[in-house]
Length: 224
Image (cartoon, rainbow, N blue to C red; front, side):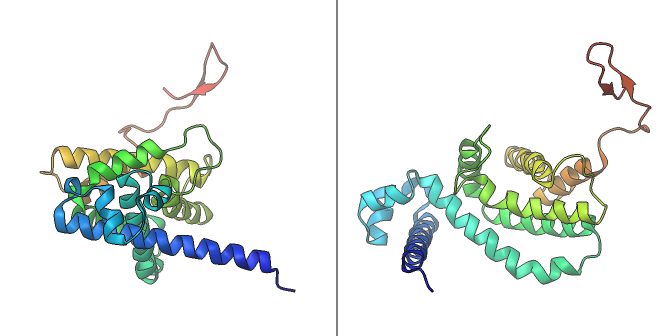
């Protein structure tokens, strides 16, 4: 028997998601028309035809609207590229393709990236096992986690850390690459992303790994 309470709850959630998407899309149109810094929350509420209190209930700060819009854009982009991505035979080739596409996406939104990165890092829930809805973990990190999980399953990625842990580390390496590019655009973002991935995959050492030695203090094995 269908649970009317569950149906009502799903309908309410769907309505909330539709309203959030409407608000974010409206905000982004205004950002594109007037410039990000010139658009106020009051203007967004007026353009979206909602009360200001309603807008703040969904998005407490302007950056949250931008992040929501980008999160939906990233999800749609992944759906569009799913077949192409699946055609690559190795984890490394799939990641190289994804990072090239990601560099193009980020480059097209360069003016928004300082605001976007500040918001994502400010919303990270350090020390909390369950991430909050709408933070950085609900977008690109989920995609990276799936990519690394696939790589682990095929034996191409080390399994000493979980895919989620690797994705967390790698996402912040990408944030660093974006920040470096914003500071010095003479090296394009594609090159920076691919160099970051090469670093993650192959490391920085230029000599073979030596036999681990045992620490005299902790008893743990360390590499020289």
